Image (cartoon, rainbow, N blue to C red):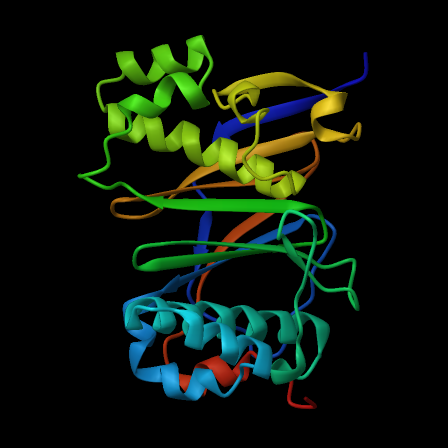
Amino acid sequence: MKISKLFISFSNIKRISQFAGNEYVLNTNDIIIYSVYIPHFMDLKSDLYLFLNSIEIKKVKRFYKEIDRNRFIIHRSVLKVILGAYTKLKVKNILLDYDFNKKPYLVSHPWLHFNISHSENFAAIAISRKKVGIDIEHLSEDFKFSDLLPDVFEDDQRLIIQNATDKKNAFYTLWTRKEAFVKALGKGIDKDFKCIPCTDGQHTVDFKLIKNTQNWQVRSFDLDEHYLGAIAFEGLPSNATNLELHIIPNNMKDLLKIIPKKV
């Protein structure tokens, strides 16, 4: 039986709040996360709306709640700005395609892998030359997760949560790891979700589950107070990885610096 290795750990990711203008180049080992604090962008939503194409505008109008419309405008527009920076495409003309599990991709730039997650006031966008998946979650006080445990966690995983001093933190840590990994694989949540490893250390994964022989890493990280995240990407820990968390500027002057001048 063919197997792949999966390495899971917690990382203190280097945070970067300054941008270097139009110098957006991805090296082989770059894994870049962009953090977007939605409330700080609410005053920019009219400007950001201009980056949307007709298909996205129709989607905006289908949202029933204004807060959901605004969140979509913000995180979709920022995603397109970032994609424009790396591809040199005109932002408004960027059209996302979707695979059978609704994972977005760019047909014109198959080398560019990206994934997005949003929860409450935050969105996070992961960019890489490797397959990548990201999940962030707000540590909700109201969410009753105990009923979910038998359906989504193996016995050893469930025991870790039940025996943890901070059960909520333990639940979200393991949950985001599974979510990030299946998003990187493009699987979505299915019958295999329960058996996906999510505890610290090295694991083996059945070739049938991931349909390739690549090795993977999953790194947990603190996004902000009351927010946890996990990012999954191809590669072994022995290979150098440049993992960074960038804070997206919340004013149009700095945001427009991200966009290549020629587009």
